[in-house]
Length: 172
View 1 (cartoon, one colour):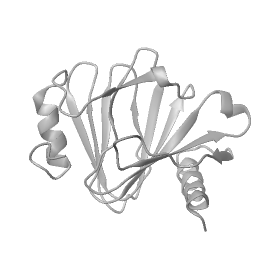
View 2 (cartoon, helix red, strand yellow):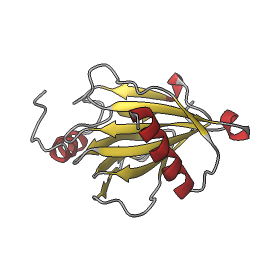
View 3 (tube, one colour):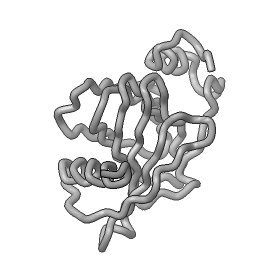
View 4 (cartoon, one colour):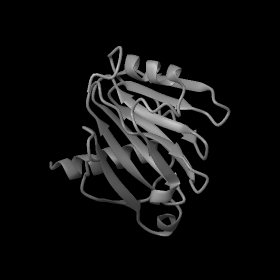
């Protein structure tokens, strides 16, 4: 089975677990510049196609997705960790730092939902796979990237970020 077929099978299983029975079309994985994780975009077939799309994150141990801020133009993001173990680290619109731990094996279909005003990242302890859904379908203006250790975020966020990545500080 190819990686693309394997990702499609994993996506379908995860989406069915959270109530999405529609068929999907899976694109080739992409790797954001300067990061070690991959994104496998997918779209729904049929009526849901115009309303929601998504991505499968595959994050290696000790790595993270980009830190992003969901902008006012952003929609609703729903993420479901499905394999491996890791953390969801965020700042809510009121400024509270929130983190959730997902341990191996992941046995339920916990969904993390967030929208405009949130700052988020996923961090892998073991190889970590997370299915993301975006309503309406994702557009570039929905989020902005925040550089690592950027002072616009509280230092407490960055301390927690590096601790969850298994380091005391930025050692890139």
